[in-house]
Image (tube, rainbow, N blue to C red; front, side, top):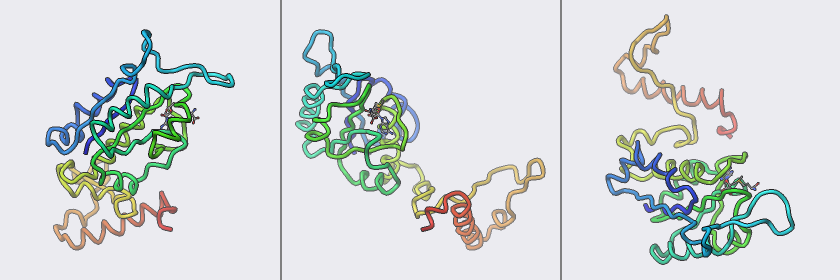
Length: 223
Ligand SMILES: C[S@@+](CC[C@H](N)C(=O)[O-])C[C@H]1O[C@@H](n2cnc3c(N)ncnc32)[C@H](O)[C@@H]1O
């Protein structure tokens, strides 16, 4: 899977490129992240890519031309790539959407700043808008990193142990509780079944706990 990221802050992506699960996926050549500095597509000497909004009002708007030129270049290099604009107005990012996106060969991620991008980019250059939740953050970079992380986890081989894919939401429920050493701390003991060595009983207990946790914390998922 190839990710192309259009951003004013490419250096932010070293946070996921250099460490952890994504870095391992890159090392195994299962994924790659290419950042594009939008200012390189500016046609003025100050490297501006934004201007005041027509109609007045606060904030600046990211202009069409540099974004369109950058997307054209990405599509030239990687024909057929899906262009996603990270936006609070987009489809909510869920486990199911991440799984669907993980089946693509390439995704280009457009990170907005300021008041966002000129509407004509959304109308003509973007295939899909994706939101990480009903709140506003200051730029699309963090949202793009969240998307890259959750999509990459779905790519076979990226996670060391495929069992780690059985996390919350993978079967529509929340994950069961986890315990590690010691067996007891401050009078809190690990549930006896987990120490029994009886795998069928352990699996049954985990299934039950998964449903219980979902009932307690996210009843909406059981519908
Ligand atoms: C300050 S926001 C602009 C918000 C925009 N004026 C609005 O109210 O819809 C700047 C950028 O952050 C990103 N962003 C903000 N909230 C987001 C969210 N919930 N999901 C994904 N991206 C988000 C988008 O790329 C957006 O262009």
